[in-house]
Image 1 (cartoon, protein in one colour):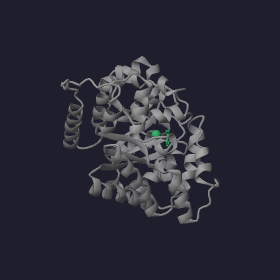
Image 2 (tube, rainbow, N blue to C red):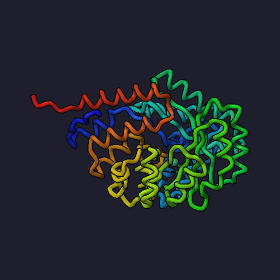
Image 3 (cartoon, helix red, strand yellow):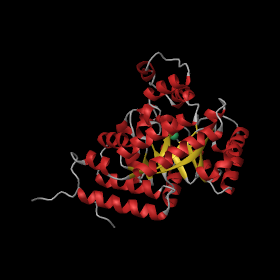
Image 4 (cartoon, rainbow, N blue to C red):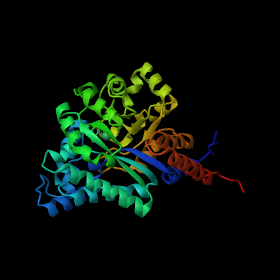
Length: 350
Ligand code: ADE
Ligand code: ZN
């Protein structure tokens, strides 16, 4: 067992930034910064219902998930061409490298684009090329996860899967996102069964705003290997036991939860309790352009607001590798590098 060195509160932010980590819950459309939205709107001749970057940014005051999704889908309307998807993903990956993210599993929402007449191929090729080029340039490992929008029908999800299958080699799994309450996982039982048959990894948003029952059905009906958010699990003792026993990862997004009023304040976030309960919790950015921060901002701010220490930091980074769908050899290498970085923070009394 690796012994975590004590690290003073003053040096903890530096350690959080320096440690290698994986990001497992990032919606690429949620990485579109207002400046890029306006640049793409101009490039593509799209008219936005906001006069300026500042006017758009000042609309980012959300009361719940739906109030955010309405603006998020409007922002994505500027994406039309393969180069737009490429530019968006390259910008995110460059930012992730600055945060010492060594591996990213990136969600994309094809229905947001195909419903506007953008071909599936345009979306997937632009994003995939960005992942390849980022890896060649900076070594970051990046893969894609196709998400179905749960406010749409299962039939629409099936049609989306059909359209994407010619490029199945370019995404590693499927997820389920968008408006949670009123759209339980069971609604997508058949399409997820098909995805499992196809050998795709399966994840699902559950227990963000929705009840623990949605987490149970994400696991038991969809066969989810990871739960996105899952913070409502703590209301159900038997569920916590099940998640802990199976080491089912939760991809937690503190700034998202704060901005969407899932918790009144970051100091009230239950991440410390999730870790203390032995769950494989990880920290992620969700929609960083909308929620005021990328992965390191999430870590630094949630640690500043709660009483977590270097021990929790190590656990979170280690969990992020354990929870990833990366090859075991890569995971071992990243876990080794994580230890090396922590050793640099041992405080000597000379
Ligand atoms: N799509 C983008 N961000 C999301 C979130 N936090 N929850 C559900 N769907 C989303
Ligand atoms: Zn999400």
